[in-house]
Structure formats: C-alpha cells, structure tokens
Length: 133
Length: 123
Image 1 (cartoon, rainbow over the protein chains, first blue to last red):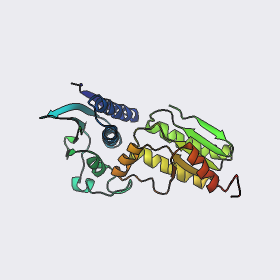
Image 2: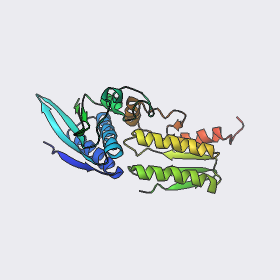
Image 3: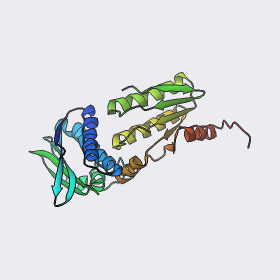
Image 4: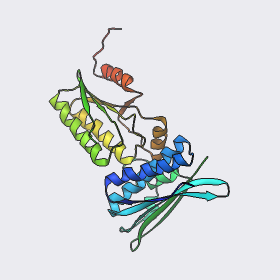
C-alpha cells in the first residue's frame, strides 16, 4: 500500500508541496481525477489556514482502509491560538469574504468526512477523509 | 516560478506554466497591473490551463488582478479553467464573480476583440 507522509507547513511554498503530495497519493490509489482535484484543493485550503493563522504546523497524509473501502485521510495540525468560535467558523458564508474566511465549510463540502478540534491551548486539528469511488 | 508575459498587439498574455505559490501569484498580479501601463495594453489574458488546483487565495488574487487591470483601463479574461477545477471551485463557493472567463486562449482573444470593440469584420 502507498505510504504516508508528513509535510511541515511553514511557508506558502509548503502549501503547494502538501497538495501535490495529496494528489500523488490519490493518483497512486486510483482515485478518479475529479476526486484527486477535490482532495488537493481541500489540502491547499487547510495548509493555507495554517500559514495564515498559526504560521507553523504540519499536514499528515495517509491511506486508510475500512472493510473493502480505500481512502485517504489528511490531518492538518497546528499549535496556533485555536478557533475562538467554531460554530461561526463553520457557518457557510459561501463567498471568499463571508464567514471567518477560513473556508472550512467549503473544505467540508469537498470531503466525505470532516472533523475539527480546536482550543486556545492546543491549537487546531482538522481531520478529513475522502473515499475512493 | 516566474510567469512569462507575452505582448500580442494590444493584449498581454500570461501563460502559467506550472503550479504557482502565493508569492508567484501576487507577483503575476502586480506585474500585469504594471505592464498594462508600460505597454498601453487594452486586454489581458491569463491562461490557467495547467493549474490543477484553484483555491481561495488563487481565486481571490485572480479576481483582484482582473479588477486592478480594469481600473488601469484594460479588460482581463481568465482562460483554461479545467472542469474538475471548476467543480472544486464551485464546491468551495469560489465563483470569480465579476471576472470574465473563456474556454481557452482562442475564445479569450475573441472575447477581448469584442469587448474592446476591435472587430476585425463588420459582420
């Protein structure tokens, strides 16, 4: 099975590296092209939030298996200030300027599973999954 | 990765060759806004055919680019957004509102000809 990867996220160049890694793994696992694009885009948004709000963090990308389903899980982790108001951040502004500008509702729409944990002491962890169709 | 900007008649054509970082995109935006004046361009085409991801930052920067060049007196058209990229953008709520788009370079040129009223025929 394809291997997992951890990409440190510190600059905007790392954003590109992270999404390319995600696409690579998706292609390797035989994801359809559309889903590879959705995954790469979601990773890009999560990595971007790390650079913009937490400055430093990492993106963990790994294959997952559940029964006969194959997928990819992505964990975006930072030790930033956390998200003060999670329900507000998850409110769909449906525009680039809407909501808190974190783009998290959009990321959730791109993925099959989405999980967000955030507090001021430990930072933010977003876990997303996309299953192969 | 610097994006080459070609001058063709009254138009500037920026043909993106590879994945761009945020800094690259911002450079492209500023370079085009500046070159519109330098070359007295009336239209700008940004070809994004090779971009496999258009996230919120890229969308916002292209939108800003289009609005900035318009304020400088030139129309911008974004060409070559791939179908999967378009799908991902819509899911993210990135609609490039107020920005003109066309299928490809050829359509982009035709669009600019029309928009800048430089019809080659009277038809």
